[in-house]
Length: 557
Image (tube, rainbow, N blue to C red; front, side, top):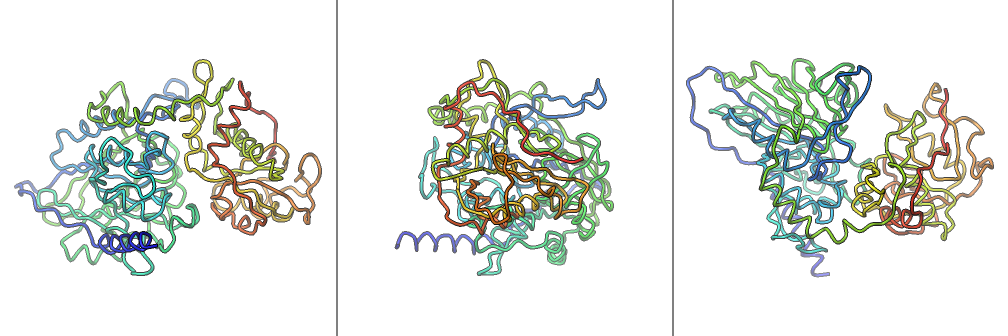
């Protein structure tokens, strides 16, 4: 207990110490020109992808309109060179991020609690990052450890050298510790460029408590994004700031290619128009999309995900007023054919690869074709079917009749390469959260309510289902009544409202994650193995696995 009290005392001290704004950098030498040029280099949603993500970057095929192709992109070693070369020739530059640098990471980073990613970003010269929802996957205390350094409280120091913490500053203006009323981390930082002050404000999406394990955000309040920034503007103006750059872990999506902005939609469209005019640039993320937009005169950008793009943003600042006179941006592909890998990053990655190899390279099974995560019209995916089947098989012994899993928990496809052997690292990339399986009892009526809840909001969140359940949904009907009456069956038999059902979900869903609150009502809970372990065992039990093609969900029309 004494050790536990000491740990809480250390966390409390860190919370108080972290709440002040980051210090103002010393003024740089002034220049006679009337304007000051500033280049921002930005990324979002890196998610620990130190190595290039499988599949590459999806983009329109320039030779065949309407077709999508993929190109190699990403990897920390190539990104480091891209950042360095894109900054060359721009004496005033700064490298920033819009959150989710860590969390839902591949095994190479996750095995070491994302210390490799923090070290990689620090070596690249990252200056500031918003805190994303995935920064809370292991809780606020772990986020503070990543910021300030020190060994993991359970696993200790496992890296090639002691972990010193981030060389960049996390910013969390909208994340408040309820007990103190102070921000968890600094709200903003001010940096001067040729004497002109620019403020960087970090924001986490207000809906974070709905998409993170409750234990990860206990004691924290996530405030409205626009209200938070607007309340800070008077304080910033008193420090001479007339230009604000917002690093926002919330976003949207748009059509028109990686620099397009046709039909911009999503939460970003409700936040940006409410921002104070002092905000000149919004670097956004969370939705894993790319766009360069102009909203109410201000620049709004997003650079896809997994480090496949770097957004280059150029600003012309008026020296006298400190305001932005001109701005433009473009998303640059982190192309290994254009940017040579950085030797320092290669050495860092190689050191961790040597430590991770015994587990990462273990062969767990084989497949005959790729297990893809792209959903069909109904919302099902091949990988989703396999994961749900694996979870059902892992929990049959405790009475499970069906399994359901959330699409957000599937982070990467399992692609067939060579003879089709699947390594543990491949499994972990697909299921990186370490959630436990939970088998619980609900009624047929609760299952129907759960399925209806998939279709609330702008984008359906279709749960992936195992063998056994089958249902139909009608996209033309209003939310709350899209489940086709009489279509829900289990093993070919209609599900009655009062029927008791044993279903398996992951611990994130069991706690009501993704707004599936009805699952919190589930009773007779039995906790099982981790989801990734269930998938690994399933692949081992079914060598040469063929992707299931049976239809479990039907969409009308």
